[in-house]
Every structure is written in C-alpha cells, then in structure tokens.
Amino acid sequence: MLKHRDLHECTELYELLSHPSVFPFVRQKATSADEYWFMTKQLIEEEARGLAISRTITDDWGQPIGTISIHDVEDGAGFLGTWIGLPYQGKGYNQKAKMLFLNELFFDYNFHTVFLRIRVENIKSQRAALKLPYIVSANESHPTLLAQVNSGMAQFDLFKIPKDLFYLTTAYEMQEGEEQAM
Image 1 (cartoon, rainbow, N blue to C red):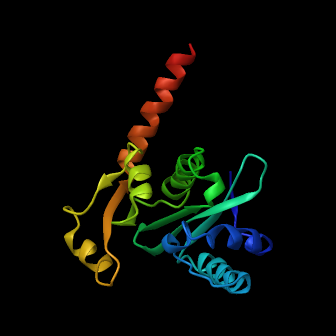
Image 2: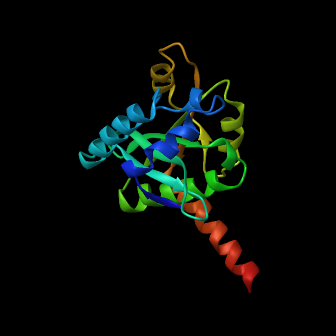
C-alpha cells in the first residue's frame, strides 16, 4: 500500500498526475515526465535531510497510483499532501494510505500535528477529509497559519490532525473491530 519513493515509477505517476482533474491539486506541478523525475529526486534528497517524508501509494497489486507526503517539516509538524490518480479515486485507497502514513509519522517519526491545506474549490478533497474522524478544522484555532497559507492567489481551508485525537480514534476503532469479531 505504501512504499518509499522510487525514481523508476515516475513515468507512471506522471501520467496519473497530469490528468486535468488531478493536476490542479498536486504540489509538484511537473510539465513532463522528466521534470517529475527531477522533482522526485529532489524530494528524495529532502527526505534524507529530514525536510520531508514521501511515500508512493500502490494499489492491491503493487502498482503506483499516487503519492502521500509531508512537507515543510518543522518542530514535529508539517503539511500533508496526497493525490491519487483518477482511475483509483473512490476505492478506499486514500483512507488506507492516510492511516498507514499517519501511523508512521506519529509513532516512528514523533510528529505531534499534521496540517492539511485544501483549496476552497476542491470539494472532493474537502469531503474526503471530513470523512476521517481524526481531522478537525483549524481555520479558527490557527488564524496566523491560515493567513500564511492564504497569502497567495489560491485560497485554502486549514485542517489539522493532532496525534492524540488520531490515537484515540484509531484505538477506539480497533477495539470496536475486535469486539465485533468476537
């Protein structure tokens, strides 16, 4: 489901991210497969320096279908970015990838907060985020950060995933699942 980034899958990923319904919402706006390869190489180098963490999302057969990354890492917090190719949207990959990646961030890398900035017009991503029980709006609780992310032309809503809420929610869901299995 998640694997470390690999330059060999850049061409496949570029084909998925270049779709008009995906491209406007990705962070790495490459205009060619070669440019995407170069951007991915830079991202891998940033991860080696502790500035970002990025994984490839794979389908049930191990084929690359998107990416999940955290950028602007600072003091145990950062901004989450996820995209999944159009043919794979709506099939549950987003929630599974987020669960695995957040577990890695919170429990392997000791993050305490993960932020999401979602474009106001990206209704699909807004709905997907709000389906996750551990995400809360951060527009009012972090007005300075909201102003920073909205300093450009694009306008965003700000959300956050606190480690304690993620842990409590996922632990409760696991307990519920175990009780139903009995």
